[in-house]
Image 1 (tube, helix red, strand yellow):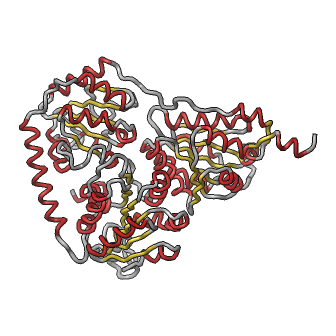
Image 2 (tube, rainbow, N blue to C red):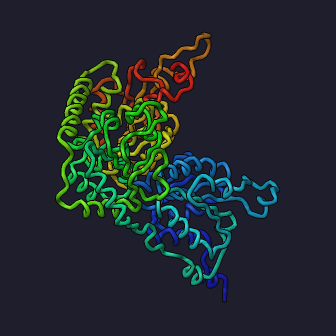
Length: 574
């Protein structure tokens, strides 16, 4: 048998990884080339996979995480070893915290050298470092185990509460050869990686009975509800019961924010007054003040809400995490809400009119006040002036995906810009982490083909701004709007010593639009509402990579946005 015949009858680690991914319906890889994955990425592209290459691993990882949220399949990120792995680790940990399914795959140094700490190129025990920061972590040492490693990674990322998984592939693995027939048989097609988890009948009855007894009921929809893709069942539940609902930021659009039962414009009132609160894929973490304190109508920050809690969640350990849960309903959200819809039937009594009427009154008052603010054509623009344009754009293009990051830019955008369709808003999430903007934008464009509008504070944009080159390289329909007020929170801080600039202040009148122009995209400076509207309309209609430098009043903004109280100095002043 000659060498060519032998080669034709064997396969290697490169191709087994690609074949395993393809077998499981995964066709996109986000990555940054380098030793030892460069050849793998070349081969993957030649084999028909979509390979999106970034300028920094963290943003490739963020793209994989967003891809997972938007598609329901684990996003895949490949990095080099040691420093590249560490760069991707932030995205992996963030994906796990936000319950986004992703798999971080990193090349690594050889085990025998790492274990003896003999000083290999980029030597690091990556598996040990990754384990505490993700749902699961695996290492594959032999080509015949690649199928198992990828199958276990997919199942771990998707099953139960989704999250991040780390897969360690030592450099030696890629070139390993085995018989082609044996390689084919070693691959695994993962069947039903996220099986339905049916709630108990008693749990459903307990929750429905409690909801029926409520005088002031409230439903809170979290991003878990959006990820579940149980849109029809959730809509049926909300409209059949007539219960007011409050969407968390990435659940906006599950039902249109303009829906009559949406209580976002009366958020403070409903949280403080509700007597029964049903959480659907939402957690009582810091974003909801842990279910305690003045936000919930209680006294001290340690005093829990008096509302009785119904919690619909796939994780059996989530209830009672901060306050007592009167009625836990554990299972996948689609099955849980379907079971509750069945139990409710058609005879569910609507909430009392004095509750819904009081909410409507406050909504009307707050929305009228907000409309008056948004109508002001200020010069220079305030956050509200600029966001009024974004608000109108999303209303005209509800299929567009809004990516949002920043401090004030995030807080104002969340409350001003209405969403009309599910999974069209992705933002900084549970950790409030900056730097997700460009990675999420690339993934949103690649995974959906829809126009993407990324609304970023100038500080937040700085974390991932170089990825506008990636946007241009792949000619993606992404419009980045940088809210430029010359600094972190605002551009007016001064150094009392009168030497270098204050730590929160940036270069004045920075021309961010030239960054996009440098890579062949469209760059526009917009200093007024009219200029901003024209620029966004052209960007969305053309689909060309665009960056709009939106000039915001540098005196606008609040220290740390709505979480000023978390600053030690601010807390000390209380």
